[in-house]
Image 1 (cartoon, rainbow, N blue to C red):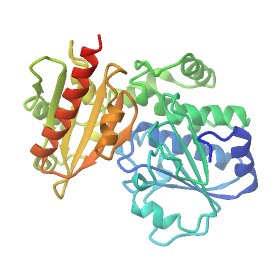
Image 2 (image 1 turned 30 degrees about the horizontal axis):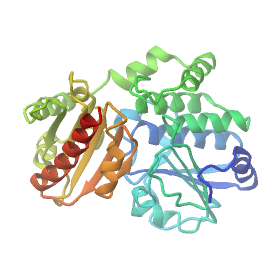
Image 3 (image 1 turned 90 degrees about the horizontal axis):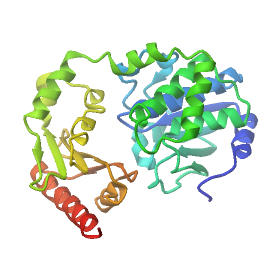
Amino acid sequence: MSDKVNFETLGEIFRQNQTFALMSHMRPDGDAIGSVLGLGLALEAMGKTVHFWNVDGLPDSLAFLPGSEKISLPPAEAPDIDVAIALDTATKVRLGEGNLIAAAKAKLWVNIDHHISNPLYADVNYVDATSPATGQIVYEILQALEMPITAGSRDAIYVAVSTDTGSFQYDSTTARTYRMAADLMERGLAVGDINAKTYDSHPYRRIELLRALLNTLELSTDGKVAHWVMLDQLRIDLALKPEDSEGLIDMIRAIRGVQVAVFFEELPGGKVRVSMRSKDRSVNVCEIATHFGGGGHALAAGIRMAGPIAQAKQQVLSAIAAAVSQKNESF
């Protein structure tokens, strides 16, 4: 199966089927939730029946989005659905077991994503690794097929793309991205209000988390790699939610001279979640992540791996140091 079917193929699927289940990856971020809402609300406006599922539910930080109350945990028993659509999910297993059980009766699987490591796991795949966000792909689908862009879809798509491009800062941002944002504003997007709700409304515990993380911050001897660590006990002590750490890695990525930033998070049960950000495509963190069973993008990738965290740190930092050294030796 090709990584990119044409939009008309997706249009036929949308037109010929009635019941859809839209899902995104566990620990959903803005692009995951925004993409699900962006497409799902458009399908509802076409008269379709839509289920909005996520195994971790809706992050509090995105509850301001219109229609977000529709997002629920997947049901324990699989309902009859025509089409299951995975959005912004690099591998099927990242949907979580609950989604896979709930979607077991789907007659067709569709995979819409922008991760270069996506293995094309559905019956129909639209994977565009050149797109800065799955939300932008959703916008282009709605535009091409002349599907309704409701006020809810409009706001959700904007938040999806804004959060996955670092507020339109990353070099994955394209001229098409800015044209999309302009069109959404012309459709009534209140950009100041939605940016304030997205970026200027954090709980105090997030600041306490930042303070604790800064106390673990380490810089490599050459100043090119910065990392910090979050132990699971901190999550318990501060009553943290998964979304509380979203975007914090960008603070250490912004250190002058740093080429790669790394966030090591100890998970319940001793596993380790690793988030990596690179400033330079010649240090491809997706390749590093793939070596450990993870994936993502050249400049942003992640891993879930076995602990203990000290061992995970040593292994990942060694691989990063080798990649950084190889990059610098090539100049």
